Image (tube, rainbow, N blue to C red; front, side, top):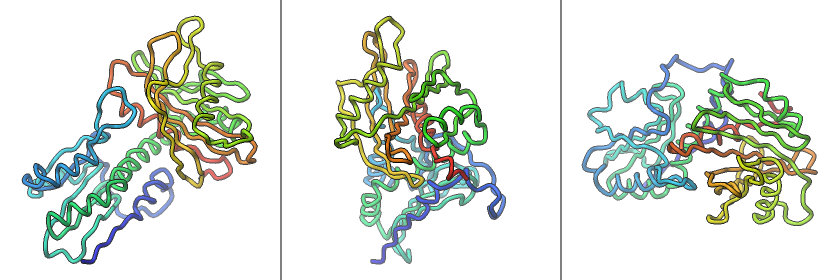
Amino acid sequence: MKRIVKIAALAAMVLALAGCKGRNRGPLLPNVSGKAGEIVVVIDKDNWEGEIGNALRGILADDTPYLAQREPLFNLANVPPGSFNNMFKMHRNILILNINPQNQTTGMMYKRDQWARPQSVAQVNAYGQEDALAIIAEAKDQLPEFFEAAERDRIIANSILYEELTLRDPVEKLTGGIMHFPSGYKLRKVTDDFVWIADDKQYTNQIVLVYRYPVPENDPFDKENMIAKRNEVMKANVPGMFDGSYMTTSTGFPVETRSLKYHGIDFVEARGYWEVEGDFMGGPFVSHTFYSQDGKDLIVLEAFVYAARYDKRSYLRQVESILYSFEWKNNEK
């Protein structure tokens, strides 16, 4: 069996949508349709209701981690191949199951801007059901990240299009880099080593915190050291509604960390829950920690949401994307 796994589009999505001004973009394509976080799955009903559908739901509709309530990573909408017409071809995210014993090659293929823009299309080419299940299992990490990167890049492109440019300066002074905040975000607090920027609405708060501190002598990316420093910074800079209350890291759930690289920056991602000491507020947070350009300090970009009345997946995805928009000022394109 000849199997081809094409993942170049993963890097293309990460590099992407905001940087294509002035380039030859090929034929003019319509704008995508569909809701954020939604994937159209093109597969016949029997396979959708069988093992293949279960496998796809287990990967793409699993619970989003670190949310207080259960929310799927993506909302999946099944469309039988015979109904996959031009209307559905305009959707932002598409997954196609091509199961045919006459296929010349098999594997997972990733494409961008197939029928619309900015669109992400993944396709499983398989000889039969067992082959399809094996391909899906092999792509259990790549597939959700492909669509996650696509959603993230769309948000970043929109942030650049409607950017609140006045917010570049405080971030640049603190870090030497810039972040792209869409209109609606405002500067809440700034000190020599701390910046608080937020989009505060009546029932939702999307917040980005930026801070820096000298590199510790021992194991700067040790999880416990990072949490301790976070708590120190939050207590000093993020008060609660009541006297003596302040933000801290919840001890009721473990903080998870992993090492990543994006736009040439190596960083440690942390995910966990925040809460307010002396109050009953809390929610998910995500942070990126990396070295300053001179290597003397650690820079932390943190995003969190408070939306007690609503599901939080989309709010967190939106504000987390702002962290990924960070770039060193001297590398700005």
